[in-house]
Structures are given as C-alpha cells and as structure tokens.
Image (cartoon, rainbow, N blue to C red; front, side, top):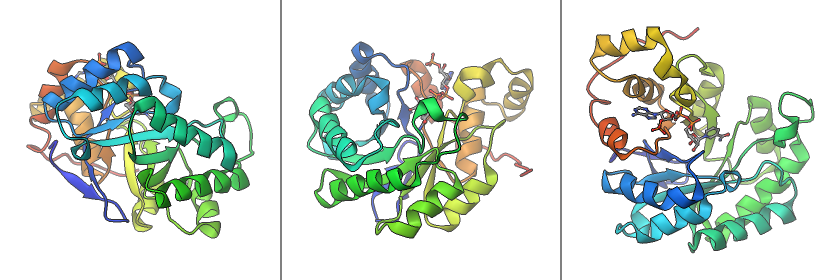
Length: 264
Ligand SMILES: NC(=O)c1ccc[n+]([C@@H]2O[C@H](COP(=O)([O-])OP(=O)(O)OC[C@H]3O[C@@H](n4cnc5c(N)ncnc54)[C@H](OP(=O)(O)O)[C@@H]3O)[C@@H](O)[C@H]2O)c1
C-alpha cells in the first residue's frame, strides 16, 4: 500500500497513502517522520498553520532515506491572500524546513479561517493572486506540483477561468460520514486528484459502534476500514497518527478487502 503511487496531471507521482501531521507538535515531528519513514511511509503532509514545518524538515533531512524518495506537501496559510504574502510564505517554508524544494504546495483554504462558514466572500480574485504565486514557485523549481484545499466547485471554476496551470489536487474532508461525492466526481472528471483528509474523522470513527461492527465484519481495524473506503473512492489518503505501531498496522490489510459503497 505504501508503495502505491498516483500520477498527477503534470506527471509527478504521489504516494497514495501519506502521513498527516496536524497536531503533531514541532518537537515531536522529526521523530514522527523518522518512525513513519522507517515503516515505509514516503509521503508527509504538513502546513504553515501546523507550526511543525521545522520539525518535519529535520525529520526528512535525517530519516536516512534520500530526499527525492519522500513526497512533502505544505500549505500556504489561509490568511495569505495576496501574491506578495503567498510568495514570501513559500520561501519561508523552504527556509524553515531546510529544504531546497517541496513536492507540493497547496492553498490551505479559499477563505481565511475566521471567515469559514461566516462570510459569503469566496476570495475569487485573491485566490487567483495566490495561485499566481504558486505557479511562479512551480516555474522556479521551488515546488514540483501545486494544488488547492477545501475548494468547492465554484472556487475551482473561478481559478480555471483565469489561470494557466490547473490545480493538480484538491485536498478535502472525506470520511465515511462526510463524503463530498459530487465534488470528488467534478475534480476527477477535470483531472484534479482528490486528497482525502481526516479519513478517520479526527479519531471520532474509532468511537462509533457501527464502524466497529463493520470493521469486525471485514476483519480489519476501524482506521483500516476508513482508509480503504477513501482508497476505493480513488483518492489519496493522509491519516494522522503519532504512533509508529499504528503506522505498521495501517500498511497491512488495506488492499485485502473490497467494500460496498453506496453513493447518496
Ligand atoms: N487541508 C485541511 O484543511 C486539513 C484539515 C484537517 C486535516 N488535514 C490533514 O489530514 C490529516 C489527517 O486528518 P486528522 O488529523 O484530522 O485526523 P484523522 O487522520 O482522521 O484521525 C486522526 C486520529 O485517528 C487516530 N488514528 C489514525 N490512524 C490510526 C490507526 N491506524 N489506528 C488507530 N488510530 C488511528 C489517530 O490517533 P493517534 O494520533 O493517537 O495515533 C488520531 O487520533 C491531518 O493530520 C492533516 O495533515 C488537512
């Protein structure tokens, strides 16, 4: 499973399973990366907003696996909504991580966090400016792929009207009890890979009796069931765990069963 890759629209390969690192503290991030890489992970997802880019960078540089074998994503903070601030933040990320390039940089959210679910302003023009910063970083070789996150269809359509490079991914909330089927379908029809974040519903799935029952039926753990679900939807999946034992468990079994999925 950890060796499986997906080819993005510009030909760059991304591992289908990555390590999410939200809520992994900066001082624990290097060790989390090292342990994940030791058990086979080759894809790490961080963000400017997570405050752990420095630790992730240390982990990547010291994990014993050549840099080019690890796919690293970070995200331009949702509050950067101009060409200048986005460009500066990409350079800061590279400096903070101590890396000469990132594999992918994505816009964290179309709206600044304080306005999510509060405002109807979708920041269409501002996101085109931020996208231009990402396109320039791509041309300059600072990043190998660029994308978006939490973008609705209307946000993507607005970008596509005005930009020269299409987003290679849209990273969205996607788990068994919250699946954006029509957005996934729209992205996939347009050659935009979907990355499923919070596949275990921030850990809530572990507490759900129905999920436990289903996992038992397939002879797997609840996280394995959750990851398998997203894989079957054709997405790239980035579960978070700070626990190396769990990392080992995760790579087993995920390909060994097939679920029935009804779209509603
Ligand atoms: N783009 C965005 O706006 C956005 C938003 C949210 C998340 N994300 C990304 O997606 C990643 C994952 O999402 P998330 O952190 O919200 O939650 P998640 O992956 O849905 O769930 C994480 C929780 O599940 C547990 N878990 C994971 N795998 C497990 C396993 N195999 N066995 C047992 N427990 C397991 C973890 O426990 P332990 O940690 O104790 O092991 C943790 O409590 C984030 O870290 C981040 O990289 C992106």
